[in-house]
Image (cartoon, rainbow, N blue to C red):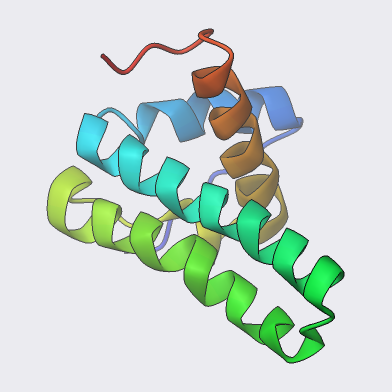
Length: 104
């Protein structure tokens, strides 16, 4: 079933996004994927491995999608809201590592 919600702002979307990320294993898989993206970006820049760039979405979203399908039991927001979803993934990462969102 297609979600037809329209979000007027990113903050509105982020509230929805957080509601779709309640399972701690799912959140940890998101953090793992986002962390790998950061590490790969450094590797791409410092080792000049530009052919790795197409792998970034797979590395970043692969673990997150596993979290949604097997642990959260919902559909990733990426498919309907790609830009907001990407921004929210990075914001979730930041909020967890700074302690604003606690998962333990």
